[in-house]
Image (cartoon, rainbow, N blue to C red; front, top):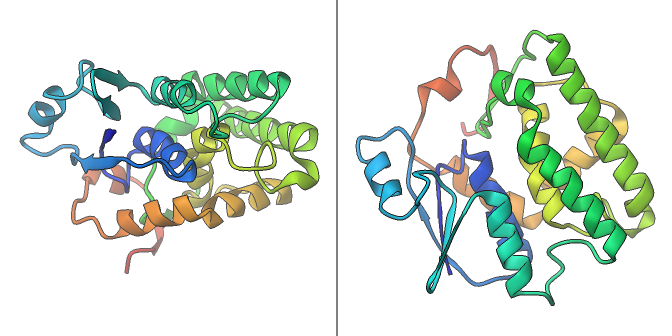
Length: 225
């Protein structure tokens, strides 16, 4: 399998299936196509029907969009705990993952993913506050119902739902957004996962910088220095 992704420092959608694959112990080749380079569109267009990444190539199968890739992997490897066990938990995990896929626009726009910096919190619009409150509600209720003493993640052990929300966790941390203690504990669990730490280390080593993800925010700390 060959996973084509964008910059690890900035690409939240690339991170999601990559974390699933690495956490599940799957063998795959990866190619990073950095965004906003003169040849970026041409290189991505040569492998992705949508002109976007991530895209997974597996023999005759070409799969794009993060959730579609995760779904494909779950079908191909039913023995791997990609989604949590049990029909009710799986249905719940897919529901909150779809909500993430289609929602939280205010947070995405105000706080683009940037693993290399820590910024001062942005102005908190009502929409942004609402996004954050809903995210905290999802994490708290899911862990209470399905996690408990089974582990630090949403359904106890790390699953695709955690991969879907991992870039959200990084945004809350990167932009110094005040959260409840249990939310902070979940963010720390994401940062402590071996697959996330591997991704972050590779992100810090990247040579590319995209001004749109760096400017317009008050920097507190450069984590790569």
